[in-house]
Image 1 (tube, chains in turn orange, brown):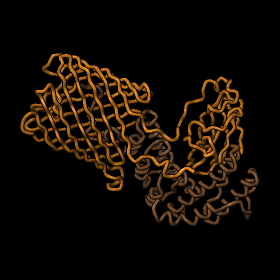
Image 2: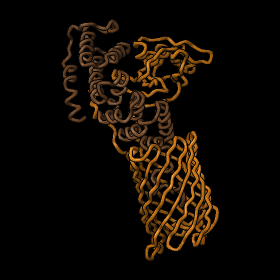
Image 3: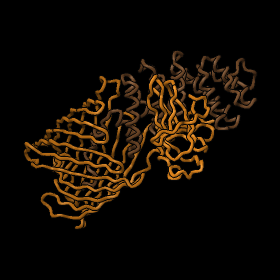
Image 4: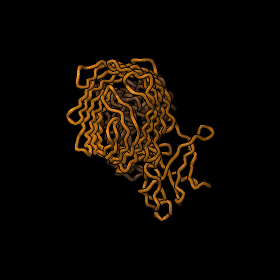
Length: 371
Length: 210
């Protein structure tokens, strides 16, 4: 008998990545240079808390090297502390960098943000305070900022404005970012301008990067752009083009699988001969009179049967439709239901489109929730 | 499980664990599909559950599922007994007013790894039926989301979200997991719908920027 406690998942998750890359970079005031980079990162997260640490080792073609490191943590207020849709965030960031044994920076800052979190849009306002140092007495850091964001399907757009004071340097940044995903591609873009600057530089900056997922643990990165000097962390303005490979730790392994692949070729072509290790997709759609229409997409199947707790586990033959689907209308009470499909008299399988779980009888069952 | 829950569940557990192949008072006709020995034991388990005021339909359905899948009698009895124990724990956590649908969903959440304490907190947080929140909770955990993360997200949404909102939330998490996000991060992102703002101190890093 499987114990409840054995299957309990961990409370926190840790993920790690290592980026290996080559770049051509031209820092403002320096000659262009090629560089190789190694950037490990580790993120630990649990409800209400995230800690990220990352570093970058750069080796330039001149033989000089640069080291950067950062550790940052964020704490979030529990949902019950603030009114609905409002969340507080307190973050701390400590980092340092060292270039070729003659330029060293460090910074330590804390930031508080108040988020308004809607379903697909939101806003934040925040303030940062801390210290930063560039080979001399530490200078105070103060930043005030506001931001807006909106998210639709797989695209997220943000806009933000900040006013920063670092010692006697002062500047404003306004900008926008976009993050979009499609299939194996993820694209990030940003466009910003530095305005009203006293010692922080002026200009318009933009960066773009594309990530192409090769497999569960690997991805290709291509990025390019120009970024401004950051007086807080000590990074110097520059332009670059980078190509890299990202390796990451395995993702936490689901104990159940959702949306397995659509029917394989053998099923689609009809030569499966009742093979039941392939399965078809089940969709649950509302029907008149409070009934539910169960639609299975298996165009090459000769027979499709469904058995579930709402059929007393008696096989029900689905009827073919003109579109190559199979369907049955059932009166299903709201709740959590268990369902299996059988194609061409093969084995009972958990349909795609449901959460697959062990059925305790040596097979799998699909779980669906009907509101 | 808390000591309180354990104490409350003990009578139910004892009855279910001790239930054997005795003559049932009213054997469900649908159980005729089982062999005689299995039918007798399952009927006794159903009777014990009925005596403990637990819903019996899920137990009958679990036995029928086993019969349809040609499982052994031993496997069917074990599965029915496990479900009955889970229903008892779910009832202890959700209270005696919980509906059969809620208890079934609660048992699934417990089986997925949620604790009775989480179920009790959910009951406290939401006045509306808990069937969908519990189903979403079980679904998230089954998808690899840590129990605490899933519970925090569902608890955060349960107080005011409609069932449709919870279903949409679950879809958003599934989509992000399918796109490669760690399950915990996907859950947090969907719960706040603001993944770009998580971890303020560490977010300003473009991949590949030297």
